[in-house]
Length: 85
Length: 424
Image 1 (cartoon, rainbow over the protein chains, first blue to last red):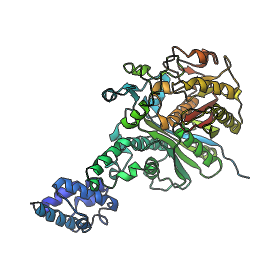
Image 2 (image 1 turned 30 degrees about the vertical axis):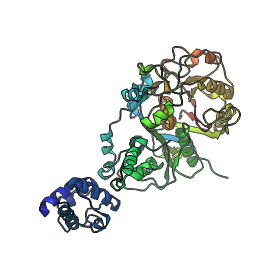
Image 3 (image 1 turned 180 degrees about the vertical axis):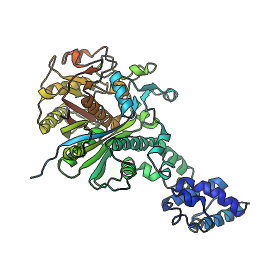
Image 4 (image 1 turned 90 degrees about the vertical axis):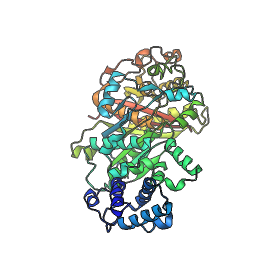
């Protein structure tokens, strides 16, 4: 799965967590989940749980702490997908 | 000396088994429409009582009130009911959900009995299967006793006292009384008050085991709740919520608000679980003192009461309640005022009962009618020995009513009585 495909899927996961739809439509790897999309930091947990179930992976707490931008989120997902296989 | 303020009702919202939203609920009151239904699931669960009052609630409609982020992940029915009722009351009072302001002069008292046990069932199964990490961030806020209050005050931007109260079946009327007192003594200009209840199968089952629920009308659900009737055979649990916006009279007048009714006074007390009172039964002295105290605090006497909105759940306690009203008002037989019980239509919504019934009182005062008691073709002979049959209307009556006494009594031997007046 390439990074663009994951980014497109991630956009769907993020939809219910941000009111900032304009920013969501134009996300790239540098987009910061909290600063740019104004996602409530408490909801990062829910986004991780949703991503886990979407890709059938497990994102441990140490990996989760590395997530702040869309790019870092893709990094973790690819790493865990690789791990799974 | 503390300056006392007059308090009026300027907004209503209701999620009732027989009507969601004020127009539908008002129509149901006038028509004497039952909201009780047979529940096949309760039959499967071997409950004695297989009927309940469940609002016809459109969950998706909450999207009209809540930001998408809040709506996503909201699971608890009881909080959903509270949000709908409170937002409707807020809008009815002429406010906006989108002003972005904190209303520092407005507080909230909202009560419930238990947080949603059905929602907690999911938590229990996740934890027991060692999957706690998958529960997410939204469970705790919905399992807090203050969950409904937290959602409501956040949605409306309330910045005054934010209180979650709980007094069993007296919760709703206690919330209204507390809100009234804060405004009366100048601690708030407005208060959003109310209560909510969702009877999931677990709480229902526990009530069922007490053998105090109606069980003889499972296949005639609309006849199952029979307050003051010779064939009353226990109460029917119901779910729902209601909310009111209470406001300082001067504030309401200054902005030309619609005023549904004025609250003249009220009392919350307990019989101390003595003198015949217990965890589940009231001390009659407590009830009589509560009603008399409410009238005293309102500057009215028993002769001034045009309508009694009873607690009257359709158990053996109905007789005792009428006896207490008669003693407290010092009125009997043909002199007894009109009395009605909304529970004949919607069952007993426990914590939500008081607020739903008070919305009904406000509507009866505003529109000058008395809603019928349904299922009262056979008034109990012991009640007929105390008051005349004409005092218990079985059809909607359009007539002038000026003062209404409303009471609720709860487990723990707690009582609340409030006196409402037509606003002139």
